[in-house]
Length: 442
Image (tube, rainbow, N blue to C red; front, side, top):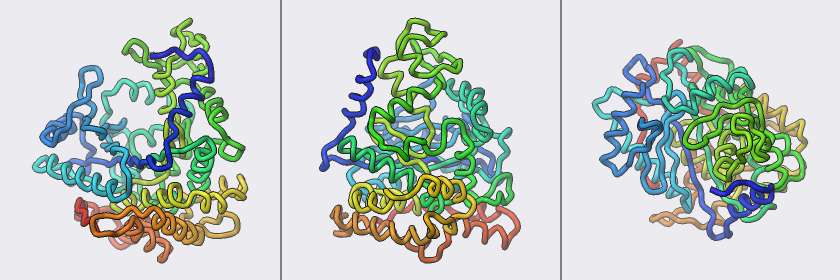
C-alpha cells in the first residue's frame, strides 16, 4: 500500500471516487439489536456465532479478527457486529430503491430463519430501551477495546453511542467536487429534519427519556460526532481533507497489530511523527481507516455517508433511502436552492433541539413538519424524474407512504411508541410485537 508523501495523494483519493451521472448507486447499512428471551437481554458472542453459523447456509462466508469470527461476507454485502454486538448489514451498492428494499427483505428473512429455535428476537428501535450499559456483552474486536477506553475522553455519552444505539446509514456517490459540496451540505442542513422524521428512540432503562430520538441526543454528545463546522463554509475536497487529518488518531493498525493512540493527529502520522511508530509514515490504507473513525452526521470517503436516521422498521429502511435519493439524485439543484440561504445558527439550533422537540422544532421561522412537506414534494418529483420502475411499472415514490403519513399526522414513530407506553405504563408491548420481515414488492 503506497506511503503518503503529499497531501495531493489524498485529494486524488477523493477525486477517484467521482462517478459518471449514469453510474450513481445507493448503499444502505442498517443496524439492529438482537435480544434473548422475554427478558430482552442482549445476545452474547456465543449466540452471535450460532446465528452466523446458520447464515452460512445462505452462502455467507466468515470474517475473522484475531482468529475469532466477527462478521460474514457474501458478494458485495457484509455483515458486521458493533461494539455491543449490534448486528449490521452493509448492503451492496444498488441502482434503485426497489433493489435496496428487496435486498433488506431477503436478508431479514434469512435472519428470521437463522434465529429460529434460538429464542432470539429483535425490536426495531434506535436506542436499547431494556438494558443498562454495564449489562451489555462486549464485542471481542480489538479496536472496540481501544475505543471503549478512548472515546469517553471526548464525549460524555460515547459509550452509550457504542453499546446502546442502532442507526441507518445511506451512502451516495458524487459526480464532481461541486456535486460533493451540494450533497454534503444538504445532508447536514437537513439533519434536524431527518432526526425529527425518523425519531424512534424515546426510551432508556425502561423509562421515558424526554427525547423522541434519544439516540441522536447521545450522538450529539459523542466524541468525534456532530455536524462538521466546515459544512457552513465554501467546501471542497482539500478543505474536508485538512479538517479530517487534524482529528486525533483513534488507533493505528500496523503489521496486523493495533497501536493505541497518544493524542497525536493523522497529520502527525503522515509526517512520520507518530511517536509509537516514529519515522513510519501513514499509507492510503491508514487514511481509509482514519476516515472511518470520524463519526459526524455526514462524512466523506469515496462516497458520501448520511448517518442521522434511527433504526426502525420498513418506515426508514425503504422510506429514508427513497427520500434522500429523490433529493440527492433526482432533484439536487432544487433541494440545494432551498437550503443554501439557511443560516448556520438556525441549522445548529434546530439540530440540537430536534431530538427532543421533533417535528415541532423551528428552523428559519417554520416548523420542521412544514419543511417536511416541502422536501417530500421535492423528493417525489426527483423520484418521478429518475423513472426507476419495478416489475409492476411503479416508480420509487411508492416507498414514501410511511413518510407521507408522518408528515400529514405531524407524528413520528417515537410518538406512537410513547402513546403505547402511556397506555400500559411499561414496555411489554415490545414482547407482543412481531417483526415484519415481509416485502410485498408493491
